[in-house]
Image 1 (cartoon, rainbow, N blue to C red):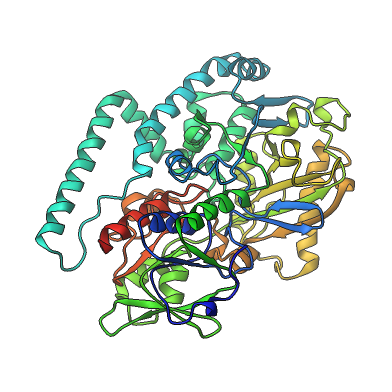
Image 2: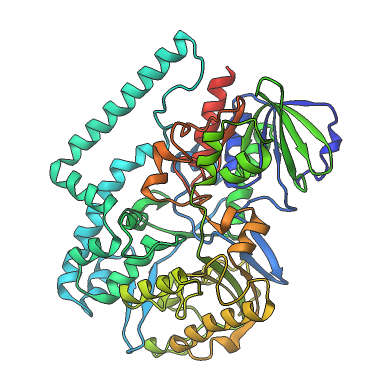
Length: 554
């Protein structure tokens, strides 16, 4: 479907070249092509999608190898690029969460408010009454933040600027901050104080103030540490709780969905929209260097095979480190800027295991034994986290240099709703696992024995809740932090292209003074998750960056 050799178009100069065919790079390409530019997307791997990719590692089983759920993809992108027409089909999950307990109890949660009240009441009547208020407050906070996601940060102008540019920038910043003030006023002082508390406090403090049940708090706390090296007690982890309600599926707030065909179908739909608009996509086209002239303006890129590709603008969907430290030649960018990029946090404690199994796990607490999916199988299954102390203990192991003795596992079984990704009667299972340090002190991820021992640790933990799970495994694919770096291109294995701490968001993403997708190298832009508003299958960085490029090239 994609062109495999760039040499088919020798000597052509493009208006824009996008480095990396991940979902953000493809989104940028679609908007640039719709804006009338000639666009080439250069993907290093044989398949597009980046971390939003579907691959058939085990014959007959299609794995969403990295990202595995959809909710954050911006509604404006789905609408403007007509992704439904281009093949995107979302599969809503209900219930959406299941937490089994070793004492025989369990907690189901989802979009059904009566179910939530009934389930939480098994643990605490107080919490059952408080939970709707908790969700409503988070929804109000998301309403405050939502417009920020689709907007370019109000950055100060860099370098020499015309009078018109200065005036336009001043007007944009004034309008931006005025809108923020109106939104803050609409929230009211009490909610604004609570919002600031959520932003700055540890998730454990926020949840302890709301609830008393350990199981409910632990279930919600996993949202706060997902994909990070943080503990539930880390200051600033509270704001990630907003992910619980931030996204939507088909207009329904807070609903996370599977994607028919796996997460690669998101990237494929965006790619189809980009191609329809005129963009060209090339696989097996690894960029080895960004080319510049003597006046520090980009002129194109050099591919690993020696091919030179000329372009007026370069948009990088690679990580900030890969883009500015490894692809841009040394001594081209200001030393202060490069140091800030190098000093950013790219650490990861995340491992992803994708499994092909011959039957569904049978959870002991449900006291059932059926081959067809039950309510416990549809949503995210929380394993090994029955209290926030257990989550913290797992994190503490990693801080001491060792993979968690009892890992925190999010299990999903997309084949319960999607019959296109596995043979009849068999299933695909995703395990998103924390915490696994990049460089363990007690071994090496390159050692097959060490890798297998950790995988078996995870499987045996699941066996405690679903006896016989290990025996159902046909085969599996495992991506540790170094694997995520080497295979997918994620520096340090960080799934967000850099930590999402409060010191790395908005006007400080990727670094201070360069949050508006531009860079000190004229014509080079960042369009991946390392730019505002950050990680997740959102598409916003790609869309926002494309709008900035179109404005600059007018």
